[in-house]
Image (cartoon, rainbow, N blue to C red):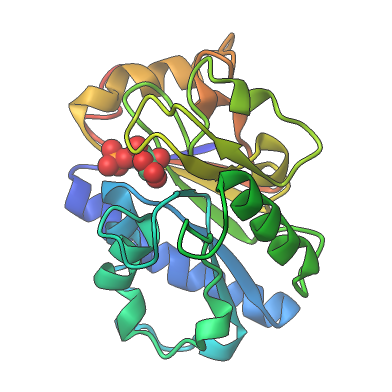
Amino acid sequence: MTIERRDTKDELGRAISERLIAEIVAAQQARGVAHIVLTGGSMGGLSLQALPQASGIDWTALHLWWGDERFLPAGDPERNDTEADQAALSALPLPAANVHRVAGPDLVADAEASAAAYSSAIRGDKAGDGVFDVVMLGVGPDGHVASLFPHHPAQRIEDAIAVAVHDSPKPPPTRVSLTYECLCRSRQVWLMVAGAEKADAVASALAPDADRWDVPASGVRGREQTIWWLDSTAAAHL
Ligand SMILES: O=C(O)[C@H](O)[C@@H](O)[C@H](O)[C@H](O)COP(=O)(O)O
């Protein structure tokens, strides 16, 4: 586990974005393809900011996924992918088929059907082992990651890649999330946190006795690397 600190949220976002480009290039060199999981939240857009100017990326060999999605129709301003589109994706020369969106109510009957379709997409992909190169996750002030919330039963689902989440404490109430099992199969997991209101969650997640039921962010790790990207205010209680 590594902690990367930067003074401000902007510096943090820039550093993440530059490192992301380096990891995409490295994955493509090593395995011919890069599978990256994006996050919503305020760090989501910041993490993508340098991509439109990146050189050295084979755009046809880059696949993008999401750690969670709000169960809303395509293009809804509240969807995590809409935010990513606006932040950078629409400016990237990426084949549309490489952008793996979570289906909303315009495409499937319910969040269960969406989670099943998303799981099949991950399983059926060329990297069908579900091993992502980098999973990026924002962390909520309550310690949630993706749509795995403290004391929420969706956290307890096993033997699944993605789950439907109902009655989310953070609106909107219906979502689809990757499971711990899937997230922790990734090579690298990055937890990206900025802001004083997250300092307690960061300290709790990094405490040696942290329990993921109480602090979901403490339960995700990469197989090769786990990086906590923190600005100075989020790191204040460490
Ligand atoms: O669907 C969501 O609600 C987001 O994906 C969520 O999980 C987010 O990443 C965190 O809440 C951190 O968000 P901020 O960085 O905006 O605080």
